[in-house]
Each structure stands twice: as structure tokens, then as C-alpha cells.
Image (tube, rainbow, N blue to C red):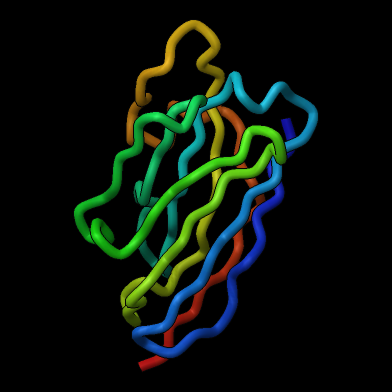
Length: 127
């Protein structure tokens, strides 16, 4: 499984970005997906997750109401729409995948449960 994240960049506070994560080498619809982020000097933290069908989602409290995770299984891509960005959202954002063929429930927020990771895309929010 290879994951390629893109869409990061420099944006002013209050602005929006849409991150994308393209998967290859797998049957994408068999995998739950998630986004995490890591700011300088901080641990990697959960941002959002989505079931393999896209029917269920979950968000970190720090970003709830400002972000939307979605997926297009026909395009093997998961998205993270981020609005009303704040300087404290500055971080490298990573997409991650976990095999979940036998169910369609949300998996853990713990990054250690996700076996496959993209390379990360940097989001910088200026004040």
C-alpha cells in the first residue's frame, strides 16, 4: 500500500485548504483511512478518520466543525477539507490506512494501529 498526500501549503488564518491522499497497490475500499498531524516539537495527533465505505466519520475536538473528511473509492483517494484555519493548525499532515475488510466500523484514533502512512504534506497557517 502506497499513500501519497498532497495539497498542503501556506495559507492565511481564516483560509481553507483541501488535502488529498491517493492510494495505490491495494483495494482501497477495504481500508479505513485517517488523517493525523504533527507540529514541530509535538507528538503526532489524530485529526479525522473515516470508515472504508465512508458512512462513518470522526473528528478531533480541536478541529471539529472546521474540517470534513471524505473519500472517493472510485478514485482511491481520501480528502480532508479544512476551513477557518488557525496558526495552531500549522503542522505536517499525514494520511494513514488500516485494513478493515471484515467490518465497516471506525477504528482507533491511536496512530500505532495504522500500518500504512503517506509521506506527509506541510500546512502552514500565518497569522
